[in-house]
Length: 586
Ligand code: F6R
Image (cartoon, rainbow, N blue to C red; front, top):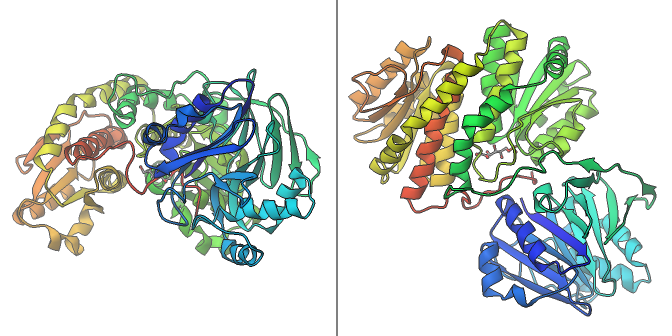
């Protein structure tokens, strides 16, 4: 969602803040803002649009100072306007705040602050924070206690930073149910919602836990709990320190990340043998297993269900994280929750994990971000090892999730993974890129698109549809191929594109019958398969990779189709409207 960064340094922080914000822009990007202490006052610059546009149009480069904070916004409360961009200031401009999350009781707080004479400039929930802190200062509290007192009145999930006009050497940071990390470097210290904000400057980080407040100076920091007692947290070394967050020669992160799958699938398939054994032992010892995830990670969970059931006779239920509450009464000490998440920060997922932990269940996870909240909450975690993913649409992390799931399935059964064969097949599938670009152009005016597949191919149909919706803004539906005739077939008419995932596995002939039904109604079928058939209007050849591994090679053409469809329709695939990479609100 929103990204926040603060920096206290012995050099000018403006460039550092701009750069940090750009690296977090993928989290949310409808507006952005900066607050820089110039030694005298807190100068604020904020506006609507991308960071670069704001920096250019508002002449931020004329700012200078050794302490400041910044924010990229993904609107929750209050429209996308310059006034609603962060930082927000108190009435007397003594307190500046940037915030990620939601203050649930802001309406009541706002009413009571207004009754005391506070004037609000925005319609956000965030703005209550600086006003509340100002109230506490007026009541005679020192800076730290003003923050702590204010926090005790806030309800919701949040991480925020506070800069005081009369304290130009330190920042305060608060964490409750949203990530906040201290970065420690030679030239100064950082506070940010995402390690990518400061990874260029340091790989040393301290992760705040829930209900903690920190005071960060240029060369020191202190952490307290919400009761004001000092707590100790160890310094972690981040494992992504050597990974660059750049597009390299690619026009977009999304395309770069699609191409990275040539290496990342193999990297994710190399799981530590002991870690895998422990993970599988836990799965086998559980009375019942629930897999949870959201969006693309949920689709990976559906593939896991298919493999665990068919290979290891291990029944699991896959639940959308946001729907998990319905299952609460079934959760006990014998339950194992397997949470799948790229970011490890998705609020719906963390909330399900909290529910499960409270009822004594074990929590295992498959995560990309090593330092994420989910990884730290889990008893065991298997990592995707595929580096940061910046494009909002999950691409390389989906296939890495699948790769980890194949590793688990192979430990639970007699499935053998031929790494060389898979690597070759993945390389080969990149041969269809130009064809996918051509198809995206051929269907660039279609308003709808359907994806069908059976068995293990069904979740890939869902994933293909999700990709096309989110980055190309095309109405798309993924369907179990056999379901089409139970209703959706009514929507198939002359020229409507249907992408059929039809590899040579046990679903082949049944799906082909469904293709025939679509053709009979005038639908235009793109067949993705290792076997050509005259029923297809367009045939996209994928390599034969062994019947259970088709998802890995089927999804890549679908990612390309979505990417090129976005370009055809004039959209920037890296930054789809209304979406954020890491969804930290419920
Ligand atoms: C789709 C996409 C989202 C995420 C979902 C879960 O391309 O990126 O649907 O998959 O928000 O995010 P994580 O995996 O970070 O929990």
